[in-house]
Image 1 (cartoon, one colour):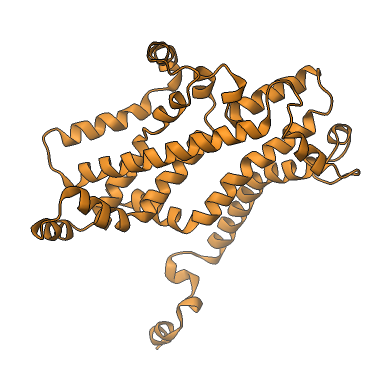
Image 2 (cartoon, rainbow, N blue to C red):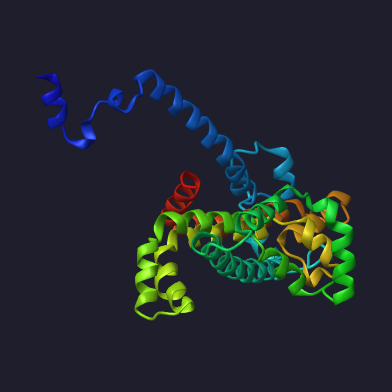
Length: 303
């Protein structure tokens, strides 16, 4: 009788124990998730609050509460000027958007093509080549810094935007995600039927594979944008002109100027720059979250 009542309950009222979770376990997981969320959001809240302060108030007031005078707009307007002598923040922001956008497009396209090749073309040495691509994740960037710089100097990529974009278009993680996503989302029978109808490989890839793998493509886009947005070491090697700096290197130079004390009121400008730096990534994730969640889960649960 009790089983019959349970089966008649609507999905939103199914007891938690049917999912294998006790109420105490749910409470603990909720508390852990809340603590983790606070840990992640606390720095963002600190940036948002202290971006509204003067330099004296940054050091002299509670970091997690506002103070008068409200200085947010003055700090934001300073981002459009060379207040430190190291460069203009808005130029660094534009550079980062360029690098991240071009790298995301290139990495997504290359990962999709490579993933499709590994997933649907059986050629000699496919697994060995795939594992070789994955093994590059084990190589630390510091170990190839000097050879990379020497190669860049030989081919003229030092102080070139392509020196930042081209390496960022190579994404072993993207190749892995697209291979696993295509394995589970693109039926072989559908591809075979398209070939029997006379469709070429390029047409199959563009008209069938890409539309069926949109969540996976969005996942690669997000991962690439975040990786390029946060990349510090590569632009530090490639660029020695501040006009080409991305946000990571530009904010580092601004932080150095603030630490030396050679310029006044640089700390709140640096904080405002940090706030503006994280906002595009947050907005991008919120906008593409439903695709990213599906693509990440699909890529992590299939093999």
